[in-house]
Image (cartoon, rainbow over all chains, first blue to last red; front, side, top):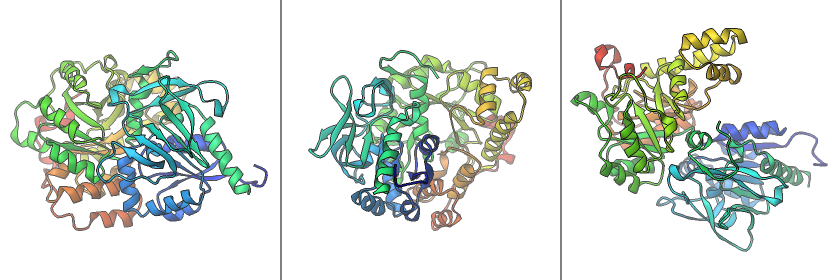
Length: 203
Length: 300
C-alpha cells in the first residue's frame, strides 16, 4: 500500500508441510518470500503463513527448535498470519481431537476440531461462496481437514459449508482456512493476507 | 488433474495427490504394533505404515509376505490420529479393496511384500483411497503414475540399513528428470519410448522439471544423516522401515531422524540429532545380497 515501495517480505513456516506451494503462490503475487525455520528468520518478516501439513509434527518441531514462543509473541504483537488446514489448527486458541499434549500458537478465538471429516476417504473438494474476498466461487480442497466447531465473540466467519459448518475465519490480522487455496490456483486469500501486511507496514 | 463438476467430490486426483503434499518434509515410519505406532506419533512421524513384519524380518524369516491382519491395521488406526498407510502386494487388487474397506489413508503397493502378479500392477484409478508406489528410475515412476499412483517413493533396498540403493534410485530419478528438461520438443517422443512411459507425462515433466506427484525416498535409511542425505538429494520426505524399531533406542532415533529431515541442510542440527542414539540397526551390505533376494528388482 501507500507507504511501502518494496515488495512485502513475508515468511512461510517451513518445519513441515506444503511450504513450496505457498512460496510459489506468494512469489507469483509479487511478495518477497522466505522460508522460516528459526527465530532470526521470523524476525525478518512482516507476515507469516502457517502451511498445511501434520499439525502434531509442526507443533513438536516448533517447540524443539525454539519457534513456539517467538511465533506466539509475534501473533500477540499483531503480525499478520494466514493459516491453512494444519495452519488453522495452529492458530486456534482451543483444539478438539488433538493428540495428548498437543498445543497451538493460538490467536483465533475459536475451537478447531482436527480430522473433522474422517479419514482420507472422506477428503473432498467443493466450491464455496466467500463474499469477503469477492464474487466468484472458491474451489476448495479439504484434505483430512479440520473445521471450526465453536466461535468466540472476537472471531468472524468468512465461509461455511452447505450444512453451516464454519471453514474460514478472520480476527484482526489473522486468517484461518480449513482448506487449501494454495492447491487450487485460488489466490484471493493470499492477496488479502498481503494487503493486511502492506497496511500494517505502512502504518 | 481431473477437473469435473462444481459439486463435492471425493477421491479426485487433486485430493489424492494433495495428502502426499501435506506429508512433505516429514518422516513416515514402519510400525508393526499399536505401541510402536504410539512411539512413532510421539516422535513426530507424519504418518505410519502398518505392516506385520518390518522388511528386515521379512528378509530374515523368508516365506511369502502378505497384507497385514485387518485387526492389526484397525488397532493401529485406533491408536493414532496421524495418517495410517498399509501395504498391499504388487497386483493384488483385492488386498487393496480390503485396505480401502478398512479406511486406511494410503495404500503402498509394495515390492517389500511378495508380488501377487508378475505382469500387472493394480489399476489404482479404480480406488478412492490414494496409492504410493516404489520406483527405481523415472520410467518406472511414470508407469506407476499412469496407473494412478498419487505418490512415488524411490525403492532403495528395504530391510538392509544400507542406504546405497536409495541413493542410486533418487539420483537416477533426479538425473532423468533434469535430462528431459534439456531435450527439444521433437526429441521427447523418443525419450518417452526409451523411458517406456506415456508421452503426455514425459512432456509434462520436460516442461515443469519435476514429477507431478510427491517423491519420497525409502529403503535402507537408518540414521539422521541418511535422512538428511536423501533430502539434500531432492527427496520430498523419507520413509524409515526397519531403521527405527531394529535399533537400540527407537524413541530417540525416531525423533532424531525427524529433526534431521527438517534441518536437512544444516550440519550443526544434523550433528546434534546424531549424538547419543545408541546402536543403529546392524544391517546387511546390499552387495552381499544374492540377486534373487533384492526386493528393489520386484516391480517393472
